[in-house]
Length: 346
Ligand code: SF4
Image (cartoon, rainbow, N blue to C red):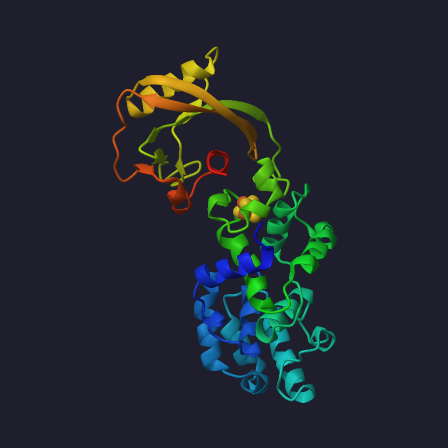
C-alpha cells in the first residue's frame, strides 16, 4: 500500500489551485492570507489579498501604517479584530523580532492573533517547520480516514492530532499540510465526497465501510432504508454510465443506471423496469453480482448490483457514455457508485 504523506503531497503538487499566496514563501504574505482565509472563502479573499499586498507590501509598511488605513483595507472581510491584531503583531515583529515572523512556535504563539492554527500554518508553510494543523477540512478528512464517529468539533482533536503526528513527513511539511486542507476543500467535501478522485482512498476506513457521508455525524439522522438496483452494462471492456441532471440531488455526478424498487417488486423486476424506463432497452440475461450498503445523511441505501446483458446497446451522447475502468477517475460519482467501481475493479 502506498505511504500516506508522499501520496498526498504528490497529488497536491499536481492538482493544487494556483493561488496568489501559494506563489511565495514570504512568511508575511502567508500570514496575511491565513488570517484572511479564516471564515472567508478563497474566491472572496483573492482580491482583498492582492490589494492588501499593494497597500502594505512588507511587515514594515504594515507596522508603520495608521490603524485607520489598515481597517479600511480590511473593510468587507468582517471580524475587525483580526485586522487590529495584524497591525499589532506587525509592530511586535518589528520591535522584537528584527522584522521577521519568528520561527520558534513558542515565540510566534505570543503574537496577537497567533493561535495554534495560525502558528502551525504560517511556520509550516513558510519555514517548513514540523507542525500539524487542524482546521475544519483537516478534521473532517482525518475523521473519515479513521472512521471516527461523532460530530466534527474540537473534542475530536486529540485523536486527530495523534494521527497527524504519525503521518507528518520530515520535509515539505507546508505542502503536506496544504495538501490535507486542499483534499478536504476539493475532494473530501462535507457533502458528496469524490472518493474516486481521492489519492488516499485505499487508506480510508470510512470509504471502505461506506460511511463517508455520515462521518462526521450529520445533524440530521438516518430516517429510512432504501432498496435500489444498479445495472452494470458492459461492451468491449467499457462500462455504461450516465450523468445526473444539473439541478437537484447529486447534481452533475455520473452514475450507473438503475433506481429504487417499487412496492412488491423483486430486484430483477425492478432492474428490468428501471432500465426500460431510463434507456429503452431490454435484457438478454441478467445476473446478481453483489450488494453494496451505503449511508447517506437521511437514509441508508442497499444497492443490489447486477450485470445486465442488453439486447441492444444504449445510445451514447454527452451525458451517456461507455468508459474504460481506468477512466472512471475522470468522472465524479456519488459515493455509492464510487464504491461499486472499487468492488468491480479493486
Ligand atoms: Fe474522503 Fe473519500 Fe478520500 Fe476517504 S476516500 S478521504 S472519504 S474523499
